[in-house]
Length: 301
Image 1 (spheres, rainbow, N blue to C red):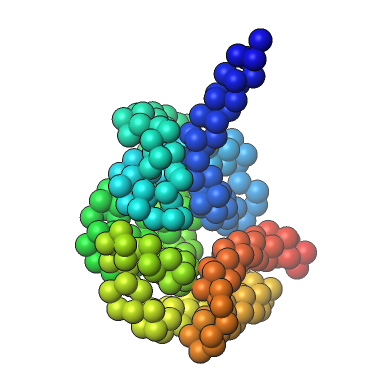
Image 2: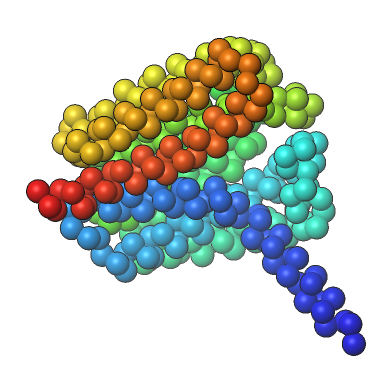
């Protein structure tokens, strides 16, 4: 009589494991930036059908890339405290099953984008998957402390993918959004890498805090935040956004710089993780300001 609850428990656990393969929190942030790219692509509300199909297709390919990462990084994940409980690292899902799951998601997502949105978006999204799952995970992550800088381009692509899903063509504006995410990625990830330096060292991953030291990495974070602050001015300077975005982005970047300054020059315990967590809110609010400025306040003027 207790077999059904047991089976249900096992099935629910397996379902959670497969959901975990897709890195839902990370993918959700990527989808936010893609959605912003869609909304900025037109002065009026974008086509609802193209938005939905575009977001679903991008989600499927991003989820596929995440599942491939779980499979390809299983050995590294098993050695690190932050990742040792991942389903493939623990053996709850086999590498073949994880890769099959990833390939099914990728094929479905590509087909949906190719026939339901446009071929340009489909190929660009597939290239982003290749950049993250193969170029970053298999090559750069194990080869150079600049792994997250070079490989970060794949994770910075969703605003461009959102734009092309609506317009079907490339233009300069979405590349500015890509540049913002690209410059944001190193301070975001290096803050976490400082906190988890011993994990990366134990797994023999050449993250910047391991190869060049924590103090050098803190300086690099400040340097990239200066670049990020300057890049964030560009949407206003080219007329892509208004004063609301300009003021809000400056405030957010100053707050981000304050976190990095404390990380560099104070000895507050846990500051690396505070900087990492703030970076997530920073990107969410920054892209939210772009939408608020572009689609609401501009309509009132």
